[in-house]
Image (cartoon, rainbow, N blue to C red; front, side, top):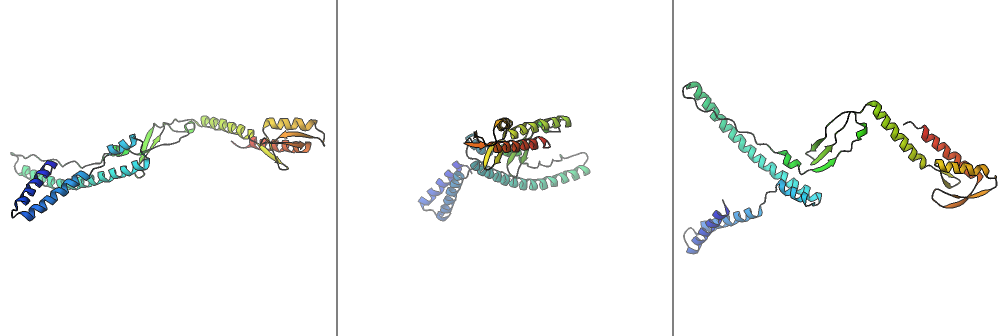
Length: 263
């Protein structure tokens, strides 16, 4: 019933009330029903995926978008269930018509009847729903891939997430080994530059330059001599020859360990 029809019916029935006709009780009920239908039509709003897209475009919090998306999915499922139930009824009716037409045509070759086709089963267009999913970009080490694959999107319909996979290349084993070796050497240089060693509670820088400075200072120092030294935390203190020699040796051993590590 349209809004105009509801208003017209309510107006007619209220006139009957004013006139005090015998249909008073029925008119009261009908008027109440008309008002209820009007209120229902005003308050009920079907959530669509366009509503969800609007929230996304306005950058609403993802929690709000997901809540609205769940409502849209629930309503879509309810509509589908109703359409599918109606489709089953129509299939049964159409099949009966098909059977009747087939039997008629078999008995009346000169007067064939048109055999109807079964109605198409309703389906849910997942593209509309999936356009509202959260987007996740899969982190792939493109330099180490072994298979050539085009970019693709994988949908998790339970979690409502679209996973974007980048295109990959088929690299050879030799290429992958070279990449791994280059990365190992780069990381090793970073690790060597970050070497620190502790001697008698003092933490020394132990990178290659620091080792050179410690070795050079220890060579020219007397056994009882001390020199000012800047430690790893940038504090300044006084150190003796034995401490410098021990720090230099410990740093050299740590660098050797890093260099001998298997890539």
